[in-house]
Length: 405
Image (cartoon, helix red, strand yellow):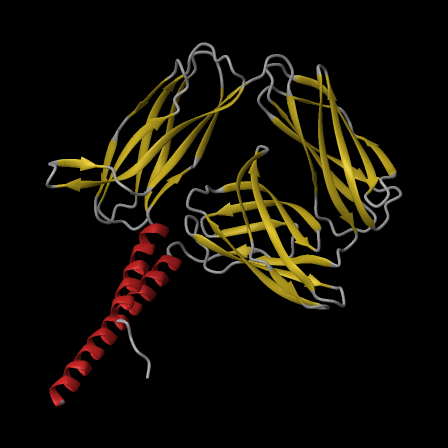
């Protein structure tokens, strides 16, 4: 006979109920706003604070890491959500100083934190509560010419051609008028140089990013390679390195999908991988990196699993999209196995209820907003009612046995 521990059942139920708040609490959209620095610039910004449960909620809003010499005024320093209210707009006014000494990226944080009311203290206090951050990134240009490059390789499936994407971010004060990209391709086995490819010169305005396509289609053979990129411009050189495979990998990502997705919730990715080797491949996993404008926005990896020889296997990964906003992302998917890796660089479009990977078989799609939350809440309520029933049942049975004895 199974011995039921009523205390354990009760505690488990409480943990499940609390987990609803953890997953479906405060949210912010967008998570980040980016501003290119100008002397004494005034900027009026706005972001949405999301109350995903639609519950009564008091939130304090405050600022951290303010840039020296700047001022940031919030239209409201606190806000109260009424029952059923799911979002509120937070407006602010930023005044930048006339000069910022350190070039590069500087982040100001606008923090929204849930607050609790205390009747005993006659006021409010902030304890261990949910908090979200809207990041206000100020990009201060470097003096003169300064740029950072990236090298991406698009997924074409062709055996006789490789498409390189050269991206250049101009982080300097001056426009770059004549950037010359050069790609050297090496065989990864013997480090022998197999190709030297020059792209057409291009220009990039200050504070902007530009991408160009460079095609390698001469002397391409199946194998593993690495490419060295040099972008030569007046006043500097920017370099990048990328490994890649030509031809179909013996272990590869076939498709990716997720069901019942809604932006702001946790998405479950199902990644189908194929092992064409006759032997089992151990410790296979994938890693996802999402970027915009050359900056990493988020990353996560799948669970690790073994894939039998000549078979396919689904790996699972979870992405918390609470602070993710709609838009297009550069996505790098890396499949790791036996000290090797296969990289895919794709364009990803994230919308309210879908995620679409361009260039990969299989799309990541979802369902109408809020379905996951309703299902989870209903499930937890059923668990709670079931737990309550069993607690009551065994207590009554125990009482009856005592009376009979």
